[in-house]
Amino acid sequence: MHRTSRAGLGVAVLALLVLVGGLEVHDRPAAASDQSPESAPVLPPADANAVVNAPYLSVGVALIRSQNARFADGEDAGHAALYGNEKLFDAGAVGNGLQFQLAAGVRLPYQLRAHLEFGLARDLDWRGNTNYRASGERQPSEARLDARQLLLAGFHDFPGWEIAPGRRVQPFLGAGFGITDYRLSGYVQRFPEPDDPQGPLRRGPGGEIPFTALPRGSGRNVTWMLTAGMAIPMGGSTHLELSYRYTDAGEIRTDVGDIAIVRYRENGTRREIPVQINETHADHRTHSLLAALRFEF
Figure 1 (cartoon, rainbow, N blue to C red):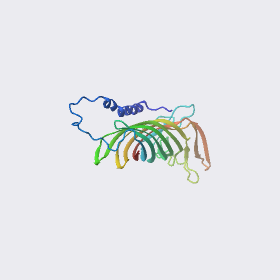
Figure 2: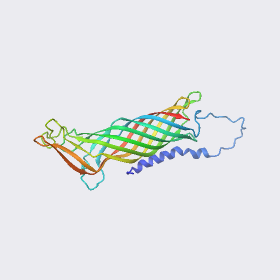
Figure 3: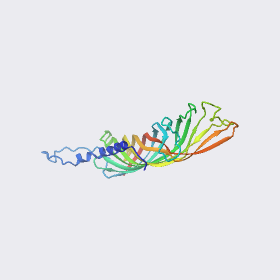
Figure 4: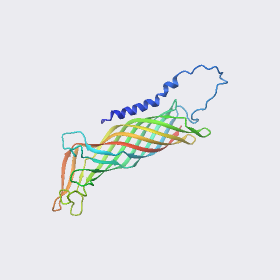
């Protein structure tokens, strides 16, 4: 496992404890009552459709948006640093994309739920801009990110409000903890507008733009998420869940390996210079809006 922010892990653990904190209150014995069983009021359940220990399946899709991030030099493995200076980096973000989710879970006592979920996001686009010296204001970069997540999540359902007899909209809060597996590929930095168009970053005879291609990257990171949403009854034991999520998936990295520095000589011929570099890394934190159908059995 790669390193993960201790503060982030603390938030996730705290959120999970909050979800189950109500168990102690529910376990306390009720005080004796002077009322007879016949005169005691009968309270309706918070959700007439809820059955403790009922299993469920959930399938959904999320629109995800990443926070802005910077690729910078990572750990020193004894090779050259790509940027070599804390003031040099590639700033950008992973573009909006879709994540498909499948979950299997169970209802628990005290309005709690727990499920194991799998999420898949493909072909997410990194778009950034580097700030190498003398390389111009516009130095666009691009890459492609694939990510898979496996999370164990817990939820607390609140009573909500009734929209029809026996049917209630239920808000919920949740938190999860697990692993993200990622693949980063096609990482290229281009230099279309250098300060000196006839200098080392000159274009090729056909207008080819000089570029630097970085190594691929892959890895697994400890991941945590927080969520809030509501479940809307659709009929029978089917609910539509609409929720917001914040996810901290650690870092994405390029591997230690050779970069390909592609440049053009004054006579127009192309030259490619391989240089072995240390890893580079950027934070991977996302916000998402999830719509899912939950089928209870």
